[in-house]
Length: 209
Ligand code: ADP
Image (cartoon, rainbow, N blue to C red; front, side):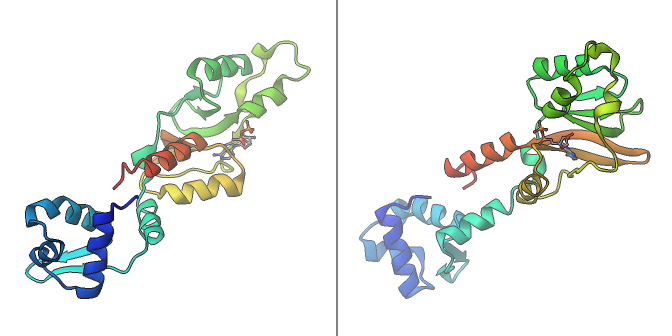
């Protein structure tokens, strides 16, 4: 977050004189309280200053990068997850490839008749299965998929930063977001490297201020 000269000046005043009222800050800057209000709101929301009723403004002592870290650690999976593309275990490798192109995704989640998550198929899984095969219609997807219990999942209230770490540690492109049911895991979303990239760009554009 880029601070304006005036905002920097306000921080300096509060650092040296806090706790200090909005009115006193305004006086020092030869401005009206109303002119100052938006700057104080921004500095408080961003976490540089803290406002206590009837006392005034304090400097929190947090640096820009500490505040950024705090912000990132609040991102939850459900705020960013996108729609998962699922296929049935009985479909063929050929159908899975078609679905991947049609839906424009790199990972498909495989579910059983009761919609429980049972597998994951990536682009390379499909390439590997295709090499040297004449008829891809004859190979069912469940033969080539990565199957439970080896699937890494996440849940809607998990932190996005933890999912990002998992993607790196496990060297995979995405995770299904699942909901626990009586009979297994239902796929309700997906988080991919693209999701993380989007969050990163949004952060820089300051949407989460
Ligand atoms: P690609 O293979 O196209 O590079 P990935 O890196 O995502 O894509 O997949 C690598 C391997 O990990 C594949 O065999 C895939 O089936 C498997 N895989 C993908 N996502 C998961 C997951 N969430 N949990 C477990 N295995 C996964």
